[in-house]
Image (cartoon, rainbow, N blue to C red; front, side, top):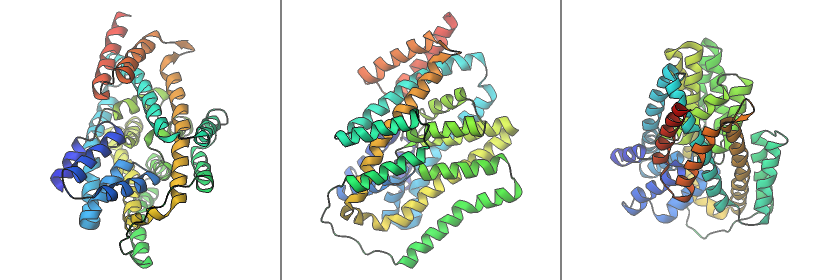
Length: 395
């Protein structure tokens, strides 16, 4: 298990779709650790949960094999490689991010990120928009965010209610494993709530200030991160840039660009944000502590959801209204990502009310390579960074 899940963690580039495909190959095709039906039911359950579904899928797979210890092993091995890379990148960014050379590289990365968000929008839309009502939910979500500045959690909650009432999935005839007693489930929930919130309580007592604010904010974010990291980036940016003033808009775009290049879940962007904010507030030591606190409150809830809910996964086949809620949330995420794409485009292409022609050229090149030629993102990102360096130098 350590070898297999360690390899999955090291090779988990390319977002949740690629990560889930890698796990399917390792756990279903190459080894008889999960059946196809078990894998698909678990994936449906993880997509219903807030947080990174690929990391939760790895945790469930480990739990299925060796209980809570196996789940911890699999989940941590999925996160740790990417977290270590993000830690090094955030420290380097804090030390050297303002150098002209680095800024030129980041211009190319940011222009490419706009295209990556468009690519994610296309992929999600193809999967989610299956009829007129799904299109209506997506458009309504976009308008609520773009024109009304509605809170992201409210948009997702309304979509889930509409889906549960209007959309229904299909039921399956499946054999269900014996369920734990209510007392056992409550004990599991209580244990992980203590693990999750105890550090926040300690921070509030001994270090009130930015670390406590981060623990509270990223704990909240962990509860509303439905539909993947893209769906909450605009919400997170609004809070991090506008409410707390931890980062600038340009730094947030840089954060996403770097997070795209690392293994592990994209939600590790929260670690980068916390470390850069900590670095500016108190140097390297505070940055490392801020990153650790954010990792804790981001991923401890994932273990709570899985360990409390995993025994009930087989029951999903008999809950069509949950399927309807998930379908509506996924449709709403299309509107959320469209809003995010517009926000990123404005932040990257417009500088002091003037369009940046270099960023536009790099984005067009990235679009050709990613959307038309179908090149891998990990190849296109370095090309875009090099173009930024070259074109800014020429200009």
